[in-house]
View 1 (cartoon, rainbow, N blue to C red):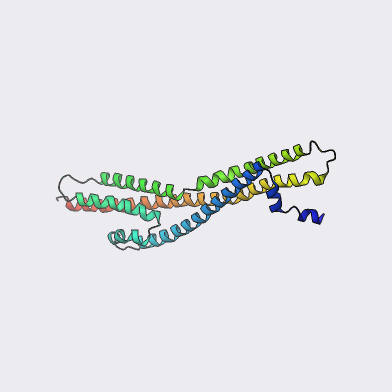
View 2 (cartoon, rainbow, N blue to C red):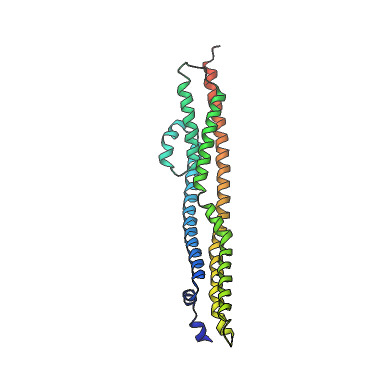
Length: 239
């Protein structure tokens, strides 16, 4: 019995599998490799985002000059989406501030807030879309890989029994290798699916948390700009 098991190792069973089962295994292997590449890339990116965003917010709320922060933020924290939202909003503020002194029209705070909110929303959505790339693939692998592996198993078992149709004497030794070959496809499907599902749930949660932080920062930043704009306009109003 030990000699029989030794002669049917995993690699031997894979090599002896039919073409359809081999194709299923190859597809699952490629899906697993791509999934792990996405998982590691997201792990590095979310770690960098967390580190840079915390450093930026600490600097932002420390009470320093926002204008100086605007000039250096892109170089200091290039991977932070909150920085991108801040830059987009403050850029609109600078345009409004520059146009308010031309005398062409009376600057309205409502116009400023609308433009800043629109600019930050567009930037936020673009950043979230960039960060979320690959999560759909993880979800697809996690939900379909078990079924793809099951298809390979069913196909392999079906071929194993078809091969026994013409045999006069059938024993477990004759059918066991074929069934074992087919079951490897199901195992590979689970190996591909489980990490993908776990990673998708984790990173989807991280993405929602990041979106909430960006929304909160955008709302607080809008309040700051509104107070600044109101003070500038009231300072120019004749008494």
